[in-house]
Image (cartoon, rainbow, N blue to C red):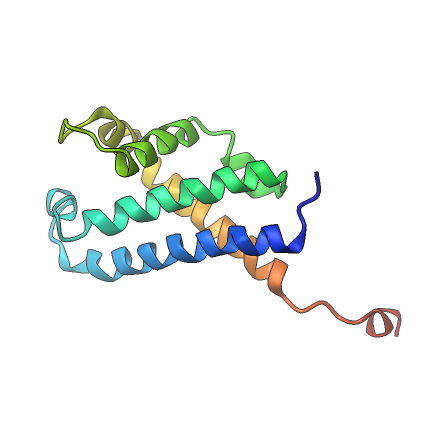
Length: 141
């Protein structure tokens, strides 16, 4: 199924929201002195909403049947399911403060690099998608 422009615009909205949470997280991160303090109430909400939002983008990407070699490769990772579970932990009440849905993604080797790469790949794709296309007459000149 080829996604129409309106559906891609809707997906972009979710990316913009996730991107804003990442921006807020990145802005606060230099103020923390260690990983433990990064996980406190100071930065954790932004990171969690960024991660959860990026999973929504991943879900929409797959639902719309979009394709990009870099993104598609990143989405073959075992991190995708862990990110789905992390999102579920964020947006569905968990009575256990240290629920495994949170711990499993954070503790997985390479998860931080992977999610950063996925975010950047989506960013690159959306920037290219919204890049003005030359008119047909300009292409033939």
